[in-house]
Every structure is written in C-alpha cells, then in structure tokens.
Image (cartoon, rainbow, N blue to C red):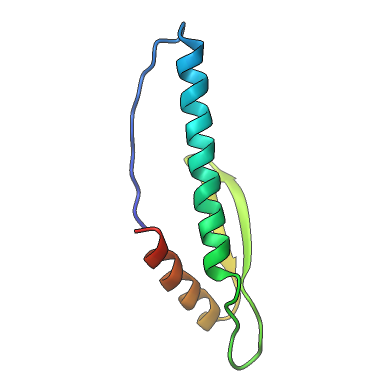
Length: 86
C-alpha cells in the first residue's frame, strides 16, 4: 500500500476554499472506492466460486478497506488493486 500525506493549512475565514478542498477530497476518495470495487467485482475463487466481499470502515486516517474471501481471492484483489491505483 502506498500512503501519501499532504498537510495544508487554509485560511479558516476562506470558507469557499475550505469547501472546495473538502469537495475535492471526497470526490477523490469516491473515485478510489469505485476503482477498487471495479477491480474486484469479477474475482472468483476457482475452487469454490466464492467472490470478494469488500467493506469500508471509518479509520482515524480516512477510510479502511477490507477484502474478505479465500486466500486466492484476497491475493488476486490485492494484485489488481495495486495495479490500478499506481
């Protein structure tokens, strides 16, 4: 996983700038979520036919994604997600 930290301190009186930054951050997060969901949508374990189960949980640093499934499903999901989010 790659983590990027950006520290920005906007002028608290500039509400338009703050709103714009928050809107952009939410949009970027939703875009990543859609990319991850698309990447794992068709993964199936060849032995069981089981697919990936994706859950999203609040985390102190943002959103935590959990992918549940067999070892094959999780490994394939990680491979695909890593390739898409580079």
